[in-house]
Length: 358
Image 1 (cartoon, helix red, strand yellow):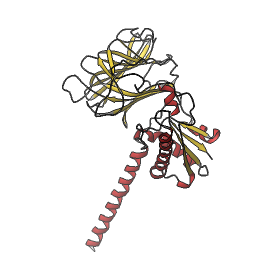
Image 2 (cartoon, helix red, strand yellow):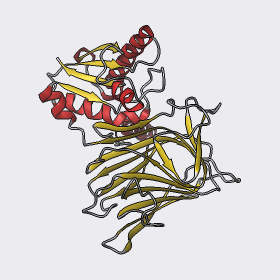
Image 3 (cartoon, rainbow, N blue to C red):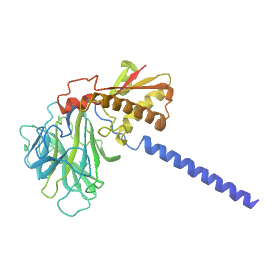
Image 4 (cartoon, rainbow, N blue to C red):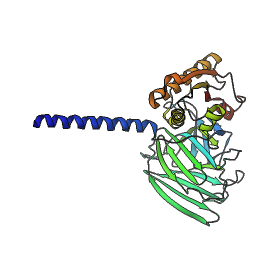
């Protein structure tokens, strides 16, 4: 009798552990990263438009930098080689809601396990006068700094006559590792992400009543980090209305490596939102259509776009439980651009995944 009771307890314990582990795994896939990029791409630079060794034409600095390649990570990278500010000269307004994201590899010029002496600014200021305000540039802003295993932040404004709020978060950028860094601004709220970790979530991160229109990276001579795939996008995407009412949703929040069809982890928040729409509307069927820019040959781009659409479908089916029969796929390659393929921004607009209600 006693042995039978012990066996029952053990079986129930194993069942509980299994169910808990399954729930934990599902949560890790669907909810650990909630970043969704803005609706309209207003700045993009993958540093392929200029030669290796050049300073990128879309950026301004009072330091020094150059486009490089690296054996460890494919593609072109912008290395910030001498201390100073580095500003992408985005001409369009960021709006009240915008996102900034880029790939980032910390590099120091001395032996250190972690990144130090690197500042990220969101600023209300003037592109023609980047040093306006000196150490606290512009009319208002937020400064986010790396300091070994701590991220510190402070905001400021002319109305406050200097610094106002401040705080810290435990996070370390390890030197030599690749990160996807993202900032999401919704009015005063500022969120920062590194890979799938939410580093900061500040409901009053920036001061009210200012137009924040400059992103600035500030370095010292002690570091020489590299960045790539830099994107600024404006507006808050209304994915539900686009798909259900307008019948067509264009997503720039689904990511692939160059010439690859594997959905990257940072795509999950956008796909999760689409899955939620489909679960709330069980009779809706969709077609997923992949699109590329004009780089490469037509045949390869067509094949790649079809494979990417299929990969997105597989993610919806396997990771989010959407019925396979509700989803069709297709790919158009470079055949249906939304704009000319004559700049980095326009190519980024043409690389997209569309969801069509059928």
